[in-house]
Image (tube, rainbow, N blue to C red):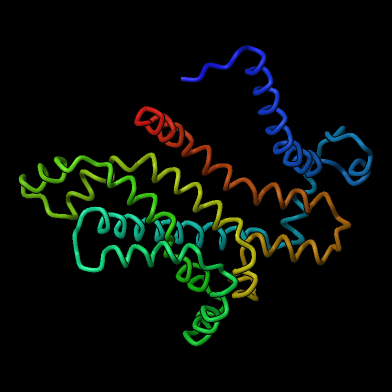
Length: 274
């Protein structure tokens, strides 16, 4: 195991701190600005001298943010849940069963990862309009349920499972669904937590697809709502805008904090196996 000398450890810590500060500083500036009254926004100090919640009140009065947040939360939760269910079932099939064409089918799954979304959005959009899904939650959820990366990661993890676990469960008379539920899933908690964060953030921050398939408040997500607010205010009302951005950022942060223990366990287990 490589052991770094004290000077190199200090340099590494300084670099990590600098990187963390570079990432966190803009976020803190957004939060601080959201609590500033209008006369302090361009005053120069990063933190508010007279904190106020008026910007948060204004953003809910000027923008239908509650509707946008509900649309984002509902579609994101349903989409991530669907992605995880399909990914677990597909990965289990690829790792557990031997069937003709398995290698070719898995190669097609991997190939789907290489196709840019810009090449597929137009035919998917046309299909959605033909099915009457335009400007609905269905258009935001169904086209994105298949997640090849999740299938790949789960399959590789399942391949490391001892074959004896499956054999013992089969000898006890457990069905495949019972094995999946009682034997496999409990051992997948860390990686499922990691995937939940990745998929949630990817879905929550998505901008292009909701912009294409929604046009009314009934289906628009929070990111589109914030953009509409920015266009309406022409960037002049920074306080409410920063408040809206702060509110929209909270769900992704909450999901990470909720699953962070499982994430740490994932890295620890990977390190032990390595």
